Length: 345
Ligand SMILES: Cc1ncc(COP(=O)(O)O)c(C=O)c1O
Image (cartoon, rainbow, N blue to C red; front, side, top):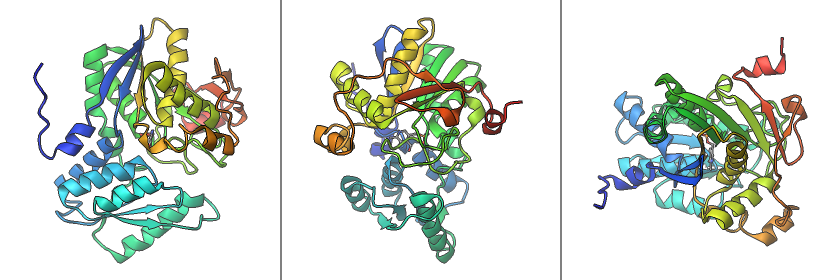
């Protein structure tokens, strides 16, 4: 086998390429090392190509997670200055990487009365944009290029696994699951889409509240979530999601972040319940950032979670999204809008 040569600039080219692994007779993992680099790179390159971002122009975004890192890598490669608006939850390791890659990290210390830290970060970004006309805001939550960025991995999935797929993935901005399902369907594949969220996230109709399982879910409703794309929605608790993440490590030696663990919990159950379906779940990042939290029993216990709790065997079907609770719940969304689900005719 020849060694694949990754062309320059090679960091983003290497990181955007996922690996497809088989974990069971009808269960596959589409594993990215840093999934959010895919939309970050596409958004920046489209903006440069369309003249919305001049060469050397300033890039801004609000993020406390992996989209910021993806953007930082792309900006570093393209020679673009960038500012990330974040909040105290951002971990020191991520902050250090963003700064080493040439970024300014603006930590917003106080949440807004409505919309929490996310709204406060947006307010700070707005103020900075007003003072820096011509700066480019990548807007991962509303920029349609977020979802469009996933055409390539969707085409790769179809080429590898065929025309009938069930895709399971966590939902934050909605770009990855919505983008891959849209591309698969647009190119003639039959794709069942299963979205994974967490309790107290407003994305699929739960009341807003504090959440420990991060990367998925949201306190605000992003325009990029295309609700009518989803066949089924699951809500997974922090305890179940974190324990499933360590289970994935122990059972398969897959060292991934907690959104991958939550997606695995759902996908493994779905694959066993539907042996006729080809089930693929999305792995969004590696486990390094979570060694001191999800992978640390003392941290889990201090957070009030039970690291030894058995994984829930199956979800409880919720009568409506707002009533979903417990460790793991599901709801037949049936490709409806949020309004159609909230007010069924
Ligand atoms: C680690 C991780 N997993 C999953 C997701 C969800 O992906 P998407 O924003 O495409 O819905 C995110 C989003 O930020 C993430 O950071």
